[in-house]
Length: 347
Image 1 (cartoon, rainbow, N blue to C red):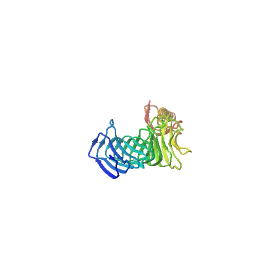
Image 2 (image 1 turned 45 degrees about the horizontal axis):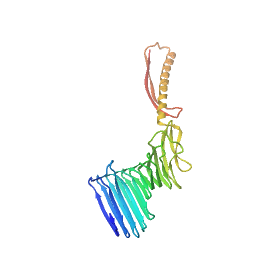
Image 3 (image 1 turned 90 degrees about the vertical axis):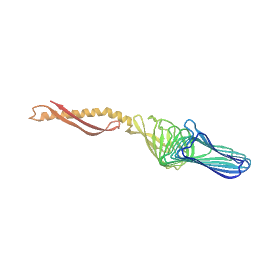
Image 4 (image 1 turned 60 degrees about the vertical axis):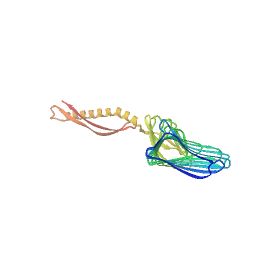
């Protein structure tokens, strides 16, 4: 903590070699009537652990100033090959001062993070900025909220499991996954490159994009098979969006395809030409015995015809194979393959 600080200062802190910290971490600058810029480079790596699942901590960055002063707190937080159970907070307070700014730049690689991200501003000249970057199969379980600016970027197999309603200025996904089965995400812009969105088609949790959305996105439903309704836009987009999203879910007898409406938003629309997997199984189980019975009857009929047409058949034991591979489609558009092998025998 720097109290009444004037000038620039930088602190470098490293937690490595499986360090375990059961306490919060605070980086604070209070400028008073002066101008203070405090930068903290905090590195958590090599199997270190912050907090616990039942004992979450807080990593806290704060800038405050009064009178003619201005304060800037920069926190560069790097997490690699480690686990943190901690909220991350960016706070900026200005009381009749020139300005206060808190910047948190968080980079998470090959790590697990469970906690929420918050931004708070107090005063007309206070600003906070939070940039979260996940890479290399990192997993984050949490939400983003607050009055400051926030952006989230995921790449290289990373996952964000959203636990509560979240609002960010920008969301970028590359070869990674955003899971919104538990809550809605609101974002100003959205960019996806081979991204995946997991939704619950039975809920009202959606991805709401107020600005431009671009790229390609696959959408899966991991929730109930009961679609809430066909009027729910699971992805809403803003002006000049070019997003291409595809996906399929099931509800009752039919599959529902993700379809872009005239308004540019994406909805699950019933495909009456394609039965759901559950419906296909039920229809196939009901239809298959009838197909087998027909094969048996055809084989017996062929044997009877052979006896009638043969002048030398004096009776005796007979046996005849029937079967093969068949493809069928029911009246309800359920397709199934039927492999049958059997014999008919008689005297």
